[in-house]
Amino acid sequence: MPGKGITVILFVLFSAAAFWLMESYEHNPFREVRPKAQVFNLLLFELAALAMYLLTNGMRLAIRVELAAAMVFGLVNHYVMLFRSTPFVPCDLLSIKTAATVTDNYDFTPGPRVVIVTLGFVLLFILAHFLKNAPRPIFWFRFPMALLAVSVISTFAGRLQDEAFQVKHYLYPYLFTPAYMTKVNGMAVTFVMNLQYLQIGQPKGYHREEAKELLASYEEEAAKPGGYPNIIVIMDEAFSELAVLAELKTNVDYMPFFHELQQGAEHTVTGYAQVSVCGGNTANSEFEFLTGHTMAFLPNGSIPYQQYINGEIPSLASHLAELGYQTFAQHPYYASGWERDEVYPRLGFDQADFIDGYWDRSYVRNYISDACDFAHVIRTYEEKEPGRPAFIFNVTMQNHGGYTEEYENFTEEVEAEGGSAALNRYLSLLKLTDESLRALIRYFAEAEEPTVIVFFGDHQPNDFVVRPVWRTNGIDSSNLTGEQQRMRYQVPFLIWANYDIPEGTGVHTSLNYLAGYVLGLAGVPKSAYQNYLSGLQEHYPVISAAELMDTGTEELLTYQRLQYYQLFDYDE
Image (cartoon, rainbow, N blue to C red; front, side):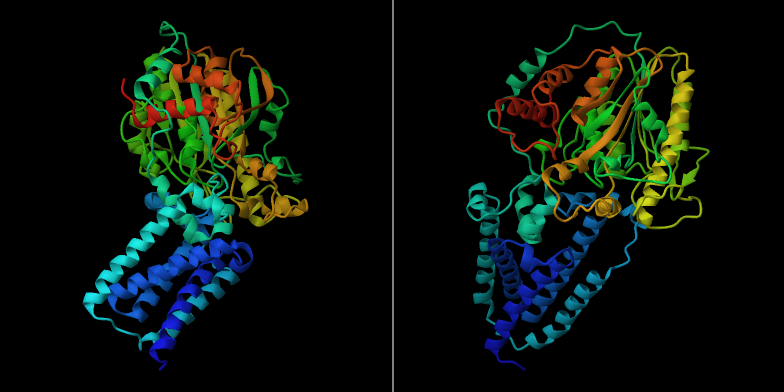
């Protein structure tokens, strides 16, 4: 057995190895984590191991606990990156229940890197046996020293969250590129930096009464109820146009109807909207569209549905309800996902339908098909209160992630040049959606009541799906330019009506503006907040968490204050 001095040295080395192995699940830490960030990560690991050792009086136990925690954290981060293309962040701890409902549709088969790194952890776990000859200080010394170690960790964590400290030591602070932030700062340091964003502070210069007065100045005169069109909004899971990333050649058109509408169809507007998420976190796109708020002012990885909407707040649904609309929220999956069953009533929806409310179900893979989902939209329209306009907000599931598995009830029709099985499967799903969208619009083209259909995707699929598109075009997916990264947050949208509306193609906007834009086209009065946003859009045409770097201008501070008021401090 090694002597006590050698044991202490091994203890330090084991702790450092835990950090390097954890990082190795995703990348080479020696090459990509910045030098000072390396030191800070190692310091966190050493302090954590020391605190555990002093609390348990067992050096071997302390190292094994740290190794197990690092391995689990590294694996979780790896699979979150694989399925969502963004790293694991503190706010994800609140989403475990939702994530668990879709895990059966993902392939967790470990690749060679995962196997090798995990075996490295197992080997260190076994070798930790040789740490049993460690010093065992008496309790009266151990306990206060453990408290001191915890205090040092807490103080150091506070320094890591300090902007001046980050700048001084070249820590990358920009939340809108979380994958790069984690790569150059290291997982532990980035995770600690993000802990500060679990709570939202008031924006600079915020005063509730000033926010209320400003909003009041944007109020429109009360309009007479009635005479408004039905508004059907379909936010389609993972519906996106990957050709915006690079040239994409396929054996057949994967969205022929949508592409036809993009050429300038009658009473139709088409374009692209910037979103704030990529590969997952669908609820944030819902949040931006329904509220007019932006994720640019909220922490990376946060989910407002789960964290911030604890009571009634203004939204598109509540505004339309005040104008006399029946309001329906629909999602052909479990009600608990992103806590929608609790959030939808708080946003002003009269009725919410989830998977149990769908009959005559048809499935594609393991999810209710878009064809079945759109039939539910039609049924809702047919059964609504006669003569009263309906607002139907529908979030689909057919195209949800999990593109690596084969299914007996789904055959791929689309093959991309240089494509993978996952890419071909994804594009084939889009083709099914396109066919269902065509049938939906054909139905409402014959409907008697004036109706507007809004259709857009919530986000693009993860990097695993789109990587062949980059590779075929000679683009290094690990070294994307800023513009190439920005395009990962772009989704197509259309606004169609069965009556005359102003037409347009190539419109660029973001989801926080889209609802107000729809109401303007439909001739429906906007809320005070939407009127304010319409003015802001003239100066900032696109705002999203992936688009906005500088939030310090007075105009954007005003937006941030109004958002804070409506989300955290609202009173009628």
